[in-house]
Length: 342
Image 1 (cartoon, rainbow, N blue to C red):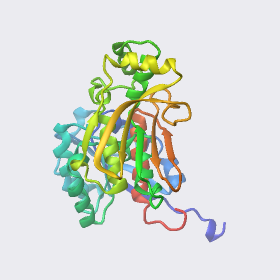
Image 2 (cartoon, one colour):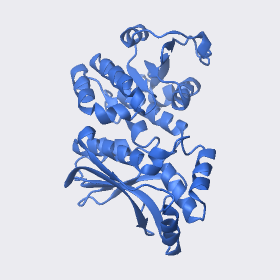
Image 3 (cartoon, rainbow, N blue to C red):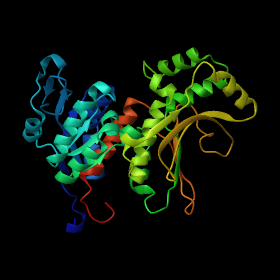
Image 4 (tube, rainbow, N blue to C red):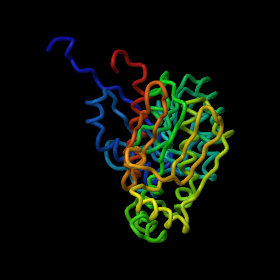
């Protein structure tokens, strides 16, 4: 074997995971069971240095499953945990709730200022602390990635951040909420709203409380974040106008289907209409990428007048989909300094 073909030893990367709900568990299990595969394919061995939940903390030993929660110790200050584990990345799998917002913001800002990259699937602190997070990253020379907050396995955030840079993107049209798309299609098939939502919950598509999905709030949030990546908007300054999926929507869904169309909850933003995101129910026709969605699929259309529209669609809406997005982002921030095609 010549020196040019000697494989590199994988770079060992310690990760502190904050949150251990369905997404956090899926992330930790992916790193545990696919570590050798990741190291071989990407030259990075990701390992969990610590898992933090509320007042409890676990520092895994070995490659086996995490011990039961009853065996975890008390949580230490995050700064100490980062130092003890030598963590290069803080991964946040916290709920996107108002209650968790301050914790998520404080953790992320502390990590970023210390030069620790942050990968997050939580949305709430991104909406309220965008500038503070950016300032902290600038001060610490660190990176933030938010794929899990903008579309789970759908790489919409990557396109907004770098994929359409320089292509003159002037608008966004999106169906970024899989629950809304699924429910609208069930309504078009004759289901009641209660039955459609119940089926979405049974399949693990909808949350126990689907109000943010059906009100348009979740779709508006994701487009606020995408617009921030695209055009530098501060999400805290963005106004939203939303039209909900409710008990009156079934008639419109059936009417659209009778004409060969599909009703969609479309979130949109435009560069020439700054700081405004709308979500409205639209009849979409064949040929429209949003019309083609089935089940809980999602899509974002980036309107680039000179380059042509660019669409990303698909992506699993599930805890595993969000976990995979965080794995992708973790690989991104830990391999950013490589050369060549890497």
